[in-house]
Image (cartoon, rainbow, N blue to C red):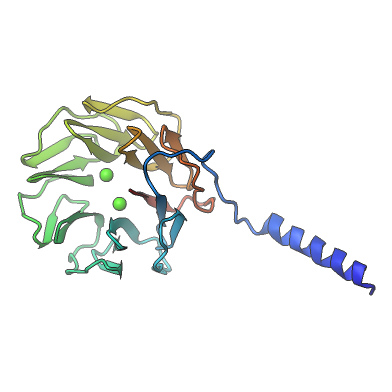
Length: 258
Ligand SMILES: [Ca+2]
Ligand SMILES: [Ca+2]
């Protein structure tokens, strides 16, 4: 074959690989300064995707869909699996595992962490203070300065310590995020409920299987992540790309690097 023929063949083969590799990255829009540096995404197999100046420090490689949560530390991150095991990367310190079959959330304190399981049981490690557990089916935990909220899958919240109730949602709920004097509660169809001083920047309640809301402090906007890896921006996008698209919907968590 002539050199030009070989070159053409290489180009064609590369095009075919590119077209069918399925590595579609989802871009989130133009580059704007929103006061944060990057994004992390976690899928249920433990793979971690980064963009912007978020640092990739390692993946978990599960054969089953058991990764549940990712939390950032100053120069690292901790990950949680459904059996309550905690994995550390970079400067993050692992302080022990929860003995459960259905862990759902990891929340960090200054020198410790909480693990919540689906039944509402709260596990404490390091300097995390135990204010009590819930009773029911739970989907999320958020910390206040001296207490915490537990969110049930029906949208009801339980308050512990200094956490203040501003009301409940009443749909199939998945996640909550706190503002100074209020909170957001996200439902699985993308519907967002606003309490106290939480600002409505919009939402789309015809989505499927949304997983996470992440607030952007500076813009007072937020991202809503679905299980396929699409991050819907409401005054949130700074132009950092999202993760690979997941046909089978395996994304479970997103974190913003401030
Ligand atoms: Ca998280
Ligand atoms: Ca949350």
